[in-house]
Amino acid sequence: MIQLDITNIYRTISHEQINALEAEACKSNNMLHDGTGAGNNFLGWLNLPSSLSPGQLKDIEDTAEKLRSQCEMVVIIGIGGSYLGTKAAVEALSNSFDLLQNERKHPIILYAGHHIGEDYLFELSNLLKGRKFGIINISKSGTTTEPALAFRLLKNQLEEEVGKEIARQRIVAITDKARGALRKLADNEGYKTYIIPDNVGGRFSIFTPVGLLPIAVAGIDIQELVKGASAMEKASAQNIPFAENIAAQYAATRNALYANGKKIEILANFNHKLHFVGEWWKQLYGESEGKENKGIFPASVDLTTDLHSMGQWIQEGERTIFETVVSIDEPDHIIYIPFEDADLDGLNYLAGKRVDEVNKMAELGTQMAHVDGGVPNIKIRLPKLDAYYIGQLFYFFEKACGISGYMLGVNPFNQPGVEAYKKEMFKLLKKPGY
Image (cartoon, helix red, strand yellow):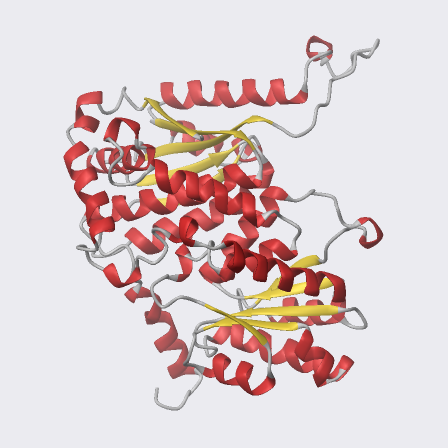
């Protein structure tokens, strides 16, 4: 199992302060399982990993295989939770330089509909011209501006290039079971479809077809991903004592630090493959907790890279921050540092050591410096970076988010503030009804 280490927060808050929140954390966990808290109509994610049947996963894997057999590239259209979980998993678990098509066993995964950028869409369209590409369109309504716009453009391009019949075979819609523009279009056109459950919000949807299908297309073992999530689901259940429940402990620790004036949480990693885990995590916690003028501001950094940009502020800026580090015990590959006679770069003192040993000492040194500088440090340790442990990590963050939101006194499962920009944008664009 992944591990949680909170020993480096005790210069700021005490062990007793954490334990004082045990009853509240357990109560919040019970509220999730009993369905007695705010937003209880969006708790479908809670037991989702363990409830997925072999048949459901097999159907997703079969569809993924069909897309892999037909496509050089597959475009995932979605915004927010409709693409961030996929992006996080794919980036974490794929070869960073597996770019040459003749060496690939699965399509290149591309993304659209996650912003409104004319240059991006033009360049994406040009890249896809003359290539075998498919589309996974993820939208509950089918009318959210960013993905709807991208889908209109790419669907038209695909149909123009290969005809409606072949295009129909290369488009999958993940949408509402009965309502909405995308559901109507999918039924009319005969697209393969999957359902976004009514009781699962977008940012909690990675273990629905929203995440599982595109992750499977990328060649990642979704069986292992779900198995890891199921293990963490069991390990963070309401019958697990606080002393053994790392999701409850993380939620309690965050809230204790917040009460102590730590208003910003920085999620840090020392493995570049975890960059988009940070992006997914920012949406999960920012959208879940940022309400009623409350909530920790979620930020993320990639280290050691950002130690040369954000490092100064983290070390000596305003002491309103704490740091959560996602650490990987053992990388997949081994590289030893060579000896050079001239030693012009002065690195012979590292000769014979693994690159990962240098990285681990950078991680430990950073932790020591930041803690000495007044930054409480939480560490989440994964034995290795694979689908099983990433599945654990995703569910761990989801469960802790639900508990933490209830402890904070907000509804973690709605997002009323997201609609504000849309209303103003629609007025400016003169959309009917606005």
